[in-house]
Length: 181
Image (tube, one colour):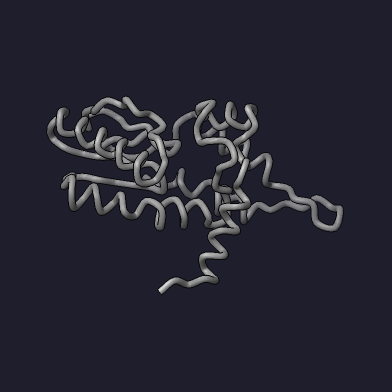
């Protein structure tokens, strides 16, 4: 049964993102291809729209493909970043290629790095602003720079024309990831 009210909310969120990435300046800033996504399309980032729509709804079928059809033994996805783990480079490449086709045909999406090559788990993985190894997780310098810029930008907000510190909110939302051992 279709829930028309929910579909109206979805349509309104998607409509709010139309043309979001049409500016060349925005595309350069976001490191996007000049032709992708097509002009007139986009999903507004913020609140829970990206997590809810991109991850939980829009890509959930991909999770089933990866685990049930491709039978990838190790798979991790965080919103729109995902990692496949296996024992054979040829198998990993085949899975990557199958996902490229599926994403384009079923979701009109492209991989940001379509020719990424398999890597050994013995080294480090740089993902989500962190360096991940078997010994733990540490913030990358770029992640620390982003954190410093975000704290500088968000620590103060105008309330009734007066600038007041927002330390509790900023601390809770920005540095939690750095505390993961």
